[in-house]
Amino acid sequence: MAQRIIIADDHPLFRTALGHAVGRVWPEAEIVETSSARGAREAVEAGAEALLLDLHMEDSNGLSALMDFRQDFPALPVVIVSASEEARVYAAASQLGAAAFIPKSASLETMREALACVREGENWFPETGSGPDEDLAKIASLTPAQRRILGQLSEGLLNKQIAYELDISEATVKAHITAIFRKLGVVNRTQAVLLAGKLDVDQAVADPAAG
Image (cartoon, rainbow, N blue to C red):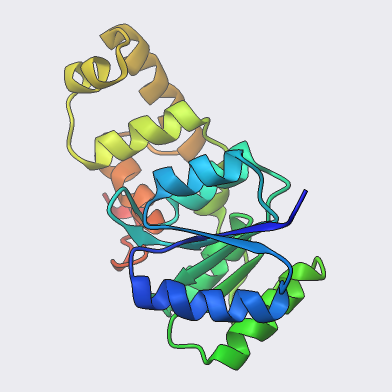
């Protein structure tokens, strides 16, 4: 089967730039472009050598999409490409299982360098100067259903609204929330939402213990 590299980014010009870099590193590969996380998932399900994933698209925002792909396709190298250039975001992507992080400000040469490392089975990240984040490890311990409910809590949905969205009972939602609190080491929704903010690469993260 021919190699397939998936580029998921909602900016056509940047997809083109990434395509040039991919073509230099995987000259024999078929390049599949998509502008959404859903499109990326459909493309990956058809087979892929690697996924280049933007953190900001219409149907995804932040590091949650990375966690979903790592959960469902653990052998797939996921390269994050993002305009977010904070050391904490690089470190978080690395801790959550990304193979590389390419800032959108990177030169074509740097993109090729990062992708060449990934092709050889190595990781590539800008310097972070920070160690593992215990809170991210707690979030990563949640099941996909629990992560989805945590996201809905972050959106301010009530238990009955979450139950309706997921087509489950309110009792089941409450059970999930109890398990989420236990895994995250928090005691209320406010603390859980503050901690979940670490997946949002655009905002400063507050200390959940202060909530």
